[in-house]
Each structure stands twice: as C-alpha cells, then as structure tokens.
Length: 277
Ligand SMILES: [Zn+2]
Ligand SMILES: [Zn+2]
Image 1 (cartoon, rainbow, N blue to C red):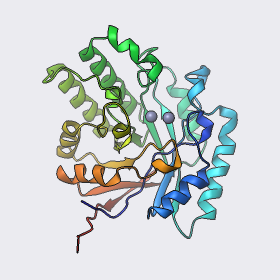
Image 2: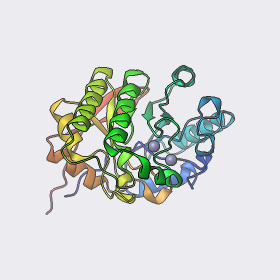
Image 3: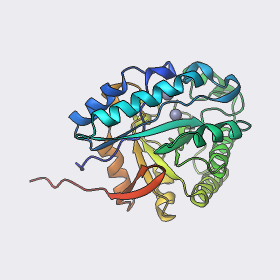
C-alpha cells in the first residue's frame, strides 16, 4: 500500500552524540522523499547530568535552535520545518524539564521513557540486565512510567510507546498484568490530551517491529487517541523510514487521520492512500 507522505516528527542531530548529519541534510532528504513537513526533535538537555552522554548539553540548546530555525527559514518554500525536542521523562526531573520547555516556543515536545530506575533499558550495553529481570515486572514498570510521563502534563507526544521491547524480550503471552498496565497507560495518555507516536525505529532494531505493538494501536484507536508518525532518524537516510508500513497499520485499525503541530496546537490531516493506476 502506498500513501501520500505525512510529517515525520522524530529526528536527531550530532549534538546527542549518537546521530550524524546536519539539520539541513535531514531536511534535504525529506524534500527529496516528497515530505511536506518534518520536525526536528533532538534529545534535550536534562538536569543533574542525567544520561549526559546521550544528549545535548544545556549550553548547546541555543545553537540547536538556531540551526533548526535557519533550516526552517531557508527551506520554507519547499517544506515546513517544525521545531521540536525529545525530552526524557525521569521521576524527579519534571520541574527542570518543565522550565526548559516553557522557555521556548516549541512546535511540539515529545516525552520519552528510556530508563527504569538506573537501568537504561534501550542502551545495548545494558541489555544484559534483562537476564536478571522478570519480564512481566519490566513491562509493567515501563508502562507505569509512560503513564506518569503523560500525567506530568508537559508533553505533546508520547515517544515510541513500547520501547521496552527493543531488544526482543517480550512480556509473557496473555499477561493480564501487562495488559492492565498498557490500558492504564492509555487512560493516562487520553486524560492528558497527548498523542502517541507510531515509530518505525523498532523495525531497525532486534525486535523488528513498529512501536507500539498492534494491540496498543487497536486499544488506542478504540479510545480515539490520535497518533503522529516518527522515524526516529539518527542519520539522514532514515528520514521517513517505513512510513507506508506505519500508515498501513494505523489504517488497518480504522485510524484515518494523523496529528500535526504548530506552536503546540494540534491539527488533524488525513491519511491518504495513493490508488494504483
Ligand atoms: Zn537517540
Ligand atoms: Zn527515544
């Protein structure tokens, strides 16, 4: 199935120390691939040295904004560039993150959970810790944190909402506890007015699957929770990665619209199939 392109709202810059390419490189590829809108959403600074190796420093934020604003203005006749940020949700950092968010007129802010306690569960170097984990507990703890990220009330988008599966460990099939934790997470997202990201990044990881799992897409659709799309590009070539596959999943669950953001205001756009001749 082929679709008209939709905005890709998740891409990084080398400031986070694990991405390559300038903002201009990402935007140029997006234009080549027929996108009309993109959002740059690099890993935000965090307080107290939290996860400092994997994100920009607070001192780099002005330069980040300047680079994205420059690309936005320079390419404005070809593509709309949105200014975003991927902030981490980590209990205890909420106030500092909120003041960082309030200090600039973002188009959107994504909130992501990458840590359970001191476990950076999406870091390959810490994947060995799964050996000592009860999978059911890990999934429940993860969804509980995602629920709390929505309840914090400061994020427009909940990033890759089941990232916990990244390295392929799955919750026990049919786990009632995990099912409940997922549903409570979705209740919190719905109550907060945030939207979920459907992310193609999982297709490039050991799990080999879109985030979130189709069970979550199905529940979210029944609750009328909207989605936006993100490739989580850490290299320009990943922009719009597997967009059609993500849109096909949404459409298969009766979701025919996606969210776009401007200055943190939401607008819906239609997912449009391109009919084969
Ligand atoms: Zn990253
Ligand atoms: Zn992330």
